[in-house]
Image 1 (cartoon, rainbow, N blue to C red):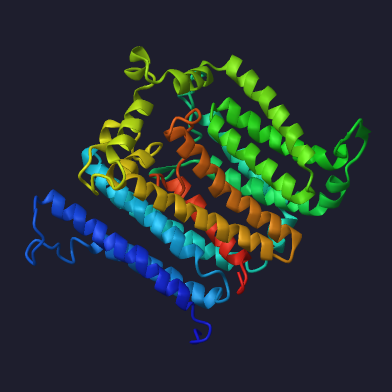
Image 2: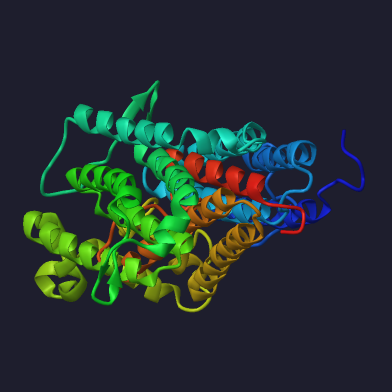
Length: 439
């Protein structure tokens, strides 16, 4: 039963912002597609035309009511932040779909968000006691790695000179197990590090000025990390390998407080990157594009995507062309890897900064949940889950802006993709469960 005192008023008021933004955005797109230049009572869309948008708003309202019942004292800002990011993702899919010859793109993304919300609420409900996550940490890690390995075995289009998505067929659709693996690895790292953080902090044998980590405590951690990295390197999903390694570094530092561990790990990463650079032509091409993208021969070939993306950012200027008024579909993979370029063209620098601000708010709230956690496992789990959002956002935006080689990591909640959306909502559900009333 919901009482007035236990009602999540802040969350309700904040959810009005993505609801209003969605209705205004869909209205704008409908007016542009029907050719109306002046807004009148007759040109406004009907309720039937706004049906999908109203359905998504109802889904968020339903999730809000359920959270009032099962987690009334949890953080009230995480869901509205995610709601705004998801709304932007749905709007961009609705806007880009028809121009890409896929008018169902927006409807599919909307459906994924609704399914993701259901998984979010189920996660909050199913993790009322987090003890079972901690006890079966090895099981979760093995399940995640096994799913990715099965996808690798069943892949029929592996090209050793290009990335290969780990995809499993599930009914009429596909599922990307690596999205689930990153959550499983965070649970494993949190469980293992919380049990061994004192030994890792103290260290083992001294070699000169450095104190080596105890092999007994570091061994299982290194084995699990190594298996994950080997699989992703085998798939040429180097962006996911960077994400997993970044998670490992962040959680190891939080658990041990040893910056020398981080320095040593980065040294090993540099060696691994050098080996991958020499083994895979795909990696060499990606690195070369960063410095030679504007060369005439490269800009029309391998560098075409990144050059068109930078042009889209430039055309957008400060305030953008307006939703539905740009031409972002000149950029390949605009709905997935390069959705930030579409936002930059149509919402401008102001829009990009607003989205970046939303991600920073999400990261802040997640880290606040970690700081306020009373249990070591809960603290590390919240830190790792938040790091997923931080690292994904950093890697994909840096790639879009030609600050580093482009990887196939999706921009959380904004880029099109069902597996990514569902996995991210599961993370949100875990963060909401980990949060406290004073978070």
